[in-house]
Image 1 (cartoon, helix red, strand yellow):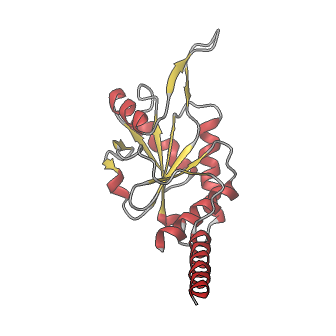
Image 2 (cartoon, helix red, strand yellow):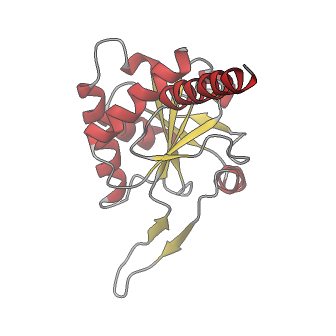
Image 3 (spheres, helix red, strand yellow):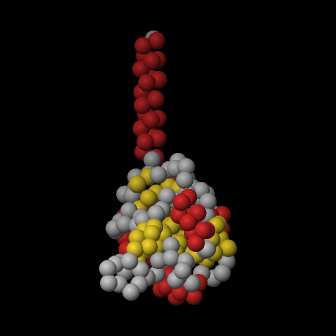
Length: 199
């Protein structure tokens, strides 16, 4: 009798464990749930409004650091995000906010960001701040950047971290999307997180 009870308990335990495992979302990016960084953000959007992570409560936030003079990584990433939105069902993109944080505050004025960022998608927002504010937010999200002058060039480039962070509706870091993550994979991960967020 005791052996039968023990076997039943074991079977139930394994079954429940299997159910929990089945509920775990499967992402194509890196799952960073429980990360202790990326908790704070305080900048200004290209429309002149002060924003924090709480400004987007209830939405997924895709956070990318770059600059408008970027020759390749930044326009590619923003284009891929916009393409991912096209692959999502109606209503889903409205639950996602893409934020482009400028790491070039010397050149990226609100006017320039306002012309550049929504070009890729009208809902995308450019964020800016004083150099020390940008540095603080970058440090919070473990992003590195530095000016770089090519030999013979008359202007500088900015080397910077190229991946994107995805935060859930409560502002918690959940995903890291590496540069080159395809629009299909981005759409898959955003939809998977939206579904997990609604459970």
